[in-house]
Image (cartoon, rainbow, N blue to C red; front, side, top):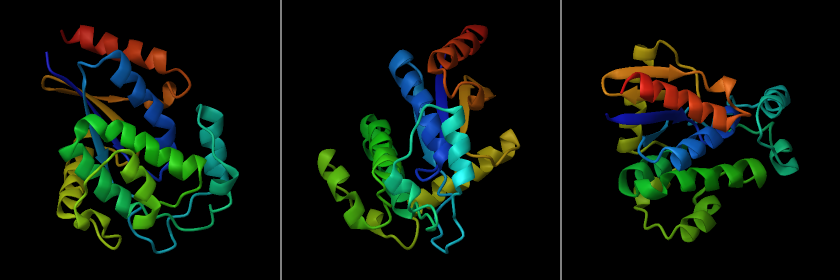
Length: 206
């Protein structure tokens, strides 16, 4: 039985941040489930319209286990731009998949806990050094998505048509030819229960 978990997310999306612990739990408890981290580049236009509100953050805090630093909260009025992170995570998922989830966690900590905007190459220097990554220059183009990142966004569009929702984040469990949309919102405070739900689906299709 082939099982894969697709995580459609944006590095700068608070709800994606709240959902990542569920992906971490799957990676730890069910290593046989292949992880596919798909950055949808929702916040890829730095036009000032990608604003996250205090109300949204309050909802995330209430329904999940994650926290947001004063530095992050103080910059909510600024438009978010995840272009560089979309390029980096798409590259990492393809070139160094064994590091991709840890890299995503590091980016989210830098953004939501440390207030790092992650919109300039210099914002990523410490993380790139920490993971000892040798990244091609095209990944650091902050004005547009790389060809690979653009292609992945189109794959996400196609998948969203199948599941009939464009909402992010989304967690999809693929078992053989079955595609199951998981309601992650039920488990944001209970990763262990989420693992049990996935095990039920795996057993059902075994």
